[in-house]
Image (cartoon, rainbow, N blue to C red):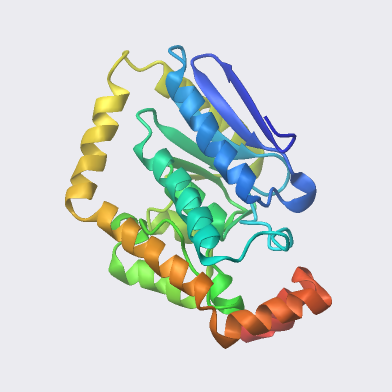
Length: 267
């Protein structure tokens, strides 16, 4: 297990904790893969009924680490494989037989939005900001394309086309999150939800989740995820002038400064 992710299990449920608070828990590709592996571990543990996914510090997760990919292969096959592996992690959470609950505070943007969206439940602090702002920066977007099935076409387009960072209340109204609580109460409320799931009669959670998932899959969710993966690969392999300009600017001034230069355009 890496130093940036912790795993624990007690009281009938497991917790996967992102532990990179100095980077607002920004994920590397390896961290995303490890999350998937740990969800698989929880599924194999008979005394675990559900999984809590959370981040240490002021942010749940600031998405993928935009500063850490300089040494990765840009060969088309390698890029396609990384994207496919990442989306597979998100979909493994969606399809996990055991419920996965996201505990969200602060930033939940970019890849973290996909991560939380693929979870079954989301308990959210009132200070959360949620969305996919990449479109504002280089024309990026979602990876796990389940959003239209969660919120409907109008809301999905509003989120994906504008890059807006939703408030917790906006996310609640769109049914992206299930509950909003004061930040000081978030940990206790999430633990209460997990205790309730762990107390359910044995064998009832997996078939219930499977039946609901199956209904959405019959409505085309899996095919939508595949199409989203294809779109993500094309955006990365054929980046266009916006992505090229963004990457050049990041190389010159860094991620934070590049983001700040664009902030006035999307206030």
